[in-house]
Image 1 (cartoon, rainbow, N blue to C red):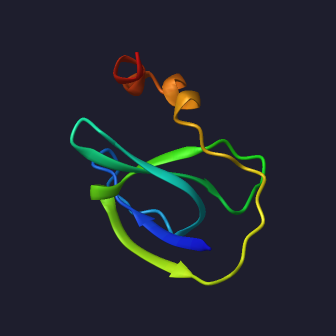
Image 2: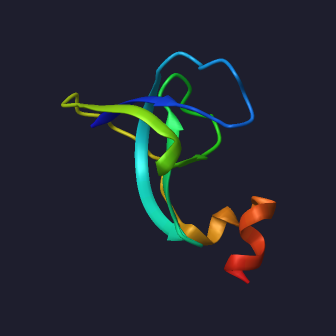
Image 3: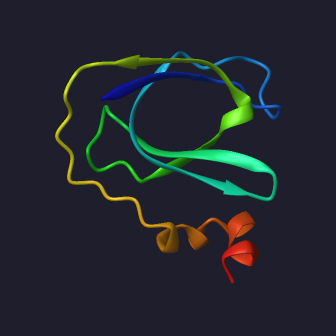
Length: 87
């Protein structure tokens, strides 16, 4: 399945266009849910995180997707804000 995601950030005034995302998983950290995924446009794009409460709109497609991407929570401590929680 794919997600059409519109995301708003308090650090940007303008909204970006909707993004097609291959979802890999979700997790809860310090009071927030996060979506882990990869933009569909590029198989080699790094895994990204989106905070669920900042999602403006979300729609699910029924298009089957083949992906070799995996989601392992232990690979995420490279995100500096998450490192202390993972330690």
